[in-house]
Image 1 (cartoon, rainbow, N blue to C red):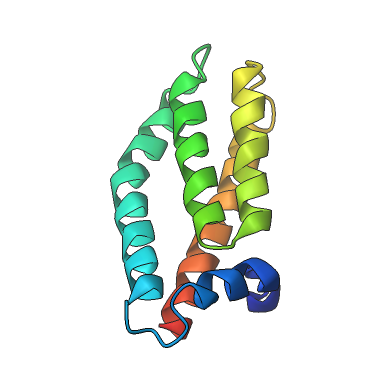
Image 2 (cartoon, one colour):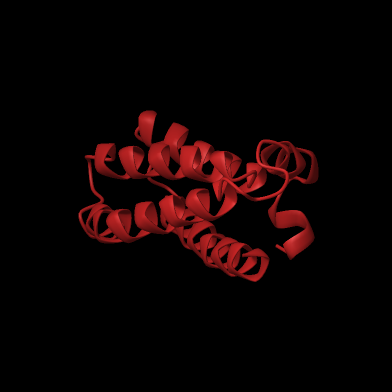
Length: 119
């Protein structure tokens, strides 16, 4: 996913409009909160994948949190990927979920790079 596609332009502009001159440090704080969320969830996500069996609930919880974290930063396509993973886990469908998570994790790294380049 390219940087241009990583962030929804309209949603990003709406976020920036909340702190147009940057004096409140909103974008920086959102980026820092996102980084903290990823650091906290990485071990949980790894454990959920390692223990992925009949119980998809740990992965569902991680996907739910990542969906929200991405949406908060205007990464709407990535939020939709995590939402699809969350839904698949809710339905107890494990087939293909590991590949979906791997793809979404790569996109998370790209999002981090995009946010750092805009900081």
